[in-house]
Length: 419
Image 1 (cartoon, helix red, strand yellow):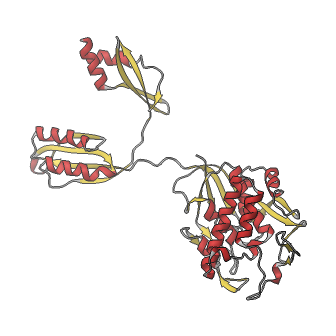
Image 2: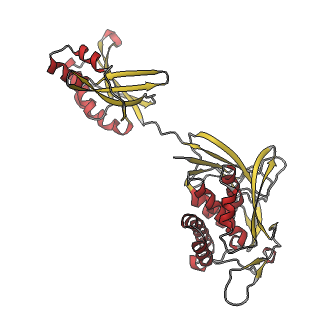
Image 3: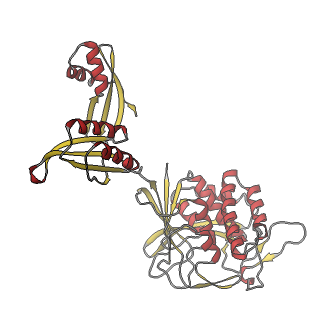
């Protein structure tokens, strides 16, 4: 599976999400085609390459009548019976603000005008945003009216970001840490601390940082946070990642001493190594029969390998060190076996990492007897080994020495098949 690591070290917004997907190869023409499906003919998309403190970044801007909205651009509400009212962002004022669309209106619009998968993704982001607003205001979701994020260009931001994710192949998304800024900002209801209340609700479970930016700059917008809440499979940065391509995306901010950008890294997360432990105990008063029996029972209890090594302990006592490698979840079971079967007063264990060859199996025919053959492949080396029990049975059936059967089986291994 393809993975996408989003590193919002200087914040997130709707246009940053769009720029990131464009930078990773989503065709601009396809996003424009999606934009034309919305009932807003006044909207357009501008894509440009810009510099942010020496970093080349993609900036995507939704235009209204050819201009980026900075608060004075007229907005029309959804077509409805009767007159359509003009809305300007600058008319917003505390306790006397105007609203954009309701959550119900936005949901119906997205469901009606967009392809199913893109529409469902965008609707999910707006529903999360509506739930966050409902928590802030203490009202039901059905009564939520959006402010700035309920106007045409903000709706387009969410739609195009959702389309970018779908067109990129719906990669598994890891997001974090998220820079949110610091200080205060003016909103429709007055002055509020950064992050805004709704944005903070949307960022539940994410790792947050102030980021490096001027005070009173809102680095992560509610739109950017809603998309993070919708698209993120995992709400923190990956501990291990193999990058294939990385790009930067930016919004309207351009700070003098730090890049106002977000890094998008496409690649994959390597498979997690198995949780293994190594267990050991020193034995100086156990009989050989007890040790052999304990070794067999430990394997039955889930140990992957068990070995016994002769050793000399304090006061010249001869004995053995019994060691085992086992999955972490089997530690209790194997320990119970060893303490029951052996006269030990203590065991030691520690986490273990190991490298494993890529393995496959085939079957060799030795004078009519099937013998399974295991092949281990390393870079530059291959190990071929017939399975002991199969070779032993074949040797007994043929009346041949074991090592002769093993020698005949290895070269006759057929085409490997994956285990």
